[in-house]
Image (cartoon, rainbow, N blue to C red; front, side, top):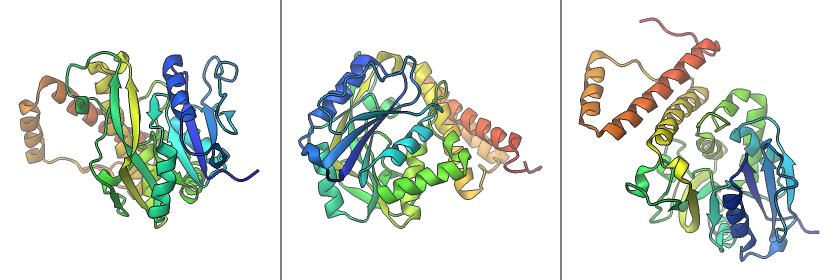
Length: 310
């Protein structure tokens, strides 16, 4: 049996059944010949387990692997370790791939062999009519009008988001080894009860560390299924706080730097900007700053750095 070129790796924890089935159906409908890819489901210790509850029929070389330690970073690491393909397509349980997704992945990798991680544009599908523009909901959609890539780790516009992202085998191995050798990096990714983020940023930056580029392409399209529970202001605020925490922790782990202390003029300027924001945007901005402060405190409490006195 020939080695698959692509592994589609779905990491999930207690998924919503109807959304999971739509995700799986999107994978089943891929136009790429099934001889060229495999399907891998990482069950991040769902309760009850997914083994006897998920139908993987119609998916090539499909298997379920259980990762009992919670956290998306660890689930991704397990997926990278188990995958047999040279390219790994990360999939979430609320994302539906366009039918030509895997075909486009191979075409892009052939055209841009220097890519170590690349991603897609995202269209939001809301369970109930949204009260505001889709772009105002955290990570609900992403517009990619043209191909964009860079080998600058800090160039955020070219960084692929997690769901639908494609990772080169060499990058995947390096990331998995880093998580194993330095478990602090596993604290960045989302886990039960904590809406964290940035493991996808870390993977993209790892690609740059290895001399690859990262990018986003309009040819790759996914639909993001958004339940009404994720459309509330409360959820958006929790996401903002998690992003502040994770981005601060990632910056520290990669560079050793903490956010600079704000002087009096910076604090006055921040208060002025907050006053000009809408109440909802002001609440999200404050949540980001809470997340930043929580990350700094955790870094100090765990003895990773000594807090400097001023």
